[in-house]
Length: 485
Image 1 (cartoon, one colour):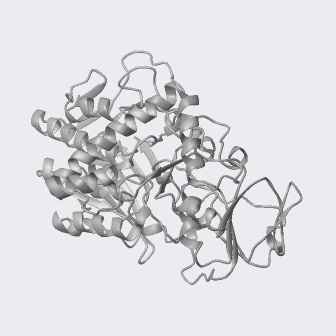
Image 2: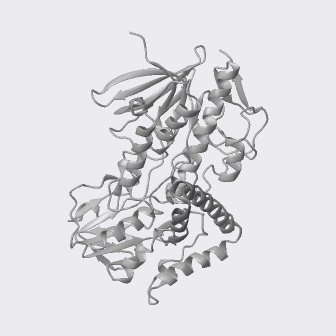
Image 3: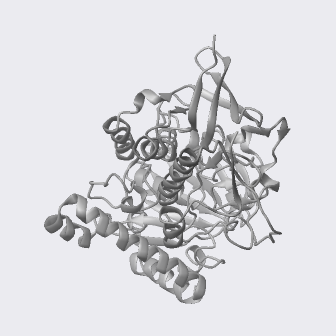
């Protein structure tokens, strides 16, 4: 029996993989492609997380695809609405049959003599190993461990008489009505959970070691509503999309240039939302500068409404230990709890820990150099999608897919079979590839490729610059080497 072969193999059917499928079908129609998805449904993050209130952490005008306007009114959408949107993309463009579910990729090996990748995956239906070959490998697997979140062990954890839940593994039957709930963490997950649960719990507490910055926005943008009324949903989407892209870019640059000014602005927004008696300095004044970690979006200020109504509270302290009835803090205070939610963050991984080898030599990606933020040095015919840290993931995913199609079309035009990023001069390193100091980043930054001190080896966080380089720029580059078989 002949081995299955495909031109482009996409790994992952989340936002990135679905976008990649669309662009391949539209921009490189002569290329066959297939998507291997480890889970039994598409959607990636939006199918995985099931905790109460799960929603986007970016506005949907920029988190939506460039090619498919988001027509909902809400700036921040819930998980089910995002899943519906992704399914619409697949069905409207007719490539559901290209997705093979329950297929967990384990390793990939490039054979230079044949100019093709050999990919081994496990069929989760029967646990059998299978293989497929492809000319071009396209990683769309995100950046974190789908099996396990960051879940540190706390002293006395086994003595707690209630339930301990990590948001990444939320039980469908969890009953938190009239219960005391403590959520450990103050990131996007905690900020989503607390207002979503507050009306049903007896009381819910956000327990944080240190404060986070929050951005408050109305969930129905008044300007967007006016545009939708007079321009229609499609035109208004693109107008609002570019308005938000420009605003995000301006705000990020301002935060880096004038951190004290932006810090006071963000803290002032919280002061306006909270009762004057609340200790802003203790609970809502971070020790770091804005955008050194990702801002948390709070639509309609729902977190602060829950606090003002007395349904939720914030405690800033360190955990001493779990007790049978709750959590004992370093200050000596004890928080009563029936349920403890450990919203302690993600575990990052590169390419889902899939083994990558070139001519039987295993590649250590942490020692490779990133090329335009989407390929790595001396690894042929591979692209990976990694979104922005200072803007929506999808903005970068769209550009990566567009540029990948340009590479493939260029190879077809010139009868090339191999494209390999390769430095032709010395490259200095320029800091971390992920310019963030969030805990989930600092724990894992050593796993990621290095960033160079010059183009095209820098991982830019500038969407406008990337539009010119990737969407409108040329494929030809002295350090992207093309060869014929």
